[in-house]
Length: 156
Image (cartoon, rainbow, N blue to C red; front, side):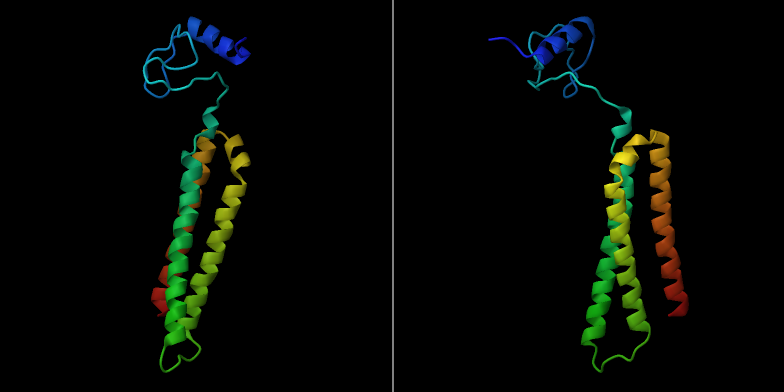
């Protein structure tokens, strides 16, 4: 039985290169099979890029996800409060408050969907640009919520 070409290429690479196991850090120079002799992790030769690090993208996702969760909970509680109020509340501040957070929930859901769909374009950017965009996303979401919160407090 012949071995896969990729296994032979990996062995050839490891015969000439000091490389550590990505799982346990054990030296792999000259290993006889595509498996770490220390931890048993399967190995394969591949092409990687530093631009696919998930850190900045996850920060952007978390910004929108946290906003969506907070806005949805506040909108839900306000809507329940308005619906069960006895006597019924006149149209006014509670309805505006609930509608504001429902609108923020929808906006946060749209922002989250856009970041998820933009993953390939995101990865094509240099890392520093990814971090910059993630920072702007985080700051923008926080600023939007701070402005809305301050407006509600000042007009409440």
